Image (cartoon, rainbow, N blue to C red; front, side, top):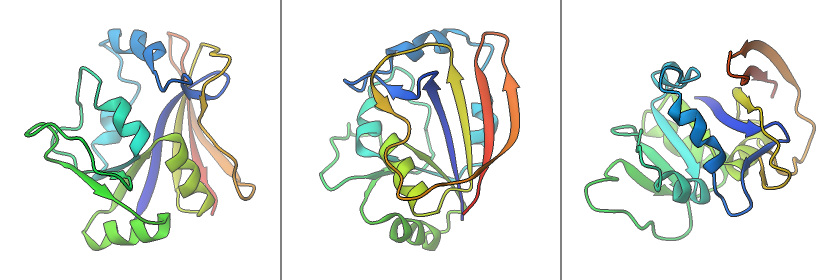
Length: 177
């Protein structure tokens, strides 16, 4: 199974404020003519795996853009799901290799993982194939970092860079396992 990351981060490496807020990304949503490659990326994905904290943040967004896409949420607690809105959301538990094996048995081929802790766990287990990281020209100063502590050094190969006219820079990396 191919495992990909598609994430935005501040220039100082944060994916959210300390309170999990991603309000600093709202200006990007207003730029409707540019999706920074998201729709092309998501069209090649057949399932999403995210951590519980990330799910709790994205389910509050005005635009629930995952309609129909199977979403698996890593959690040990019941999910508070509104009837009818989140029919494609499923809780899942386990270590990264176990979760990946379970999703492969269900027939999924390309997994998008989201959430700092989840990304770090899958990187530490050598399960990530590529990362698309978009740097937003803002310094938050503090917050939730994209990467937590890793158990080992992980080598990356830069595959491409896109310099968007509004100052965002998107790098695509191959992750060596």
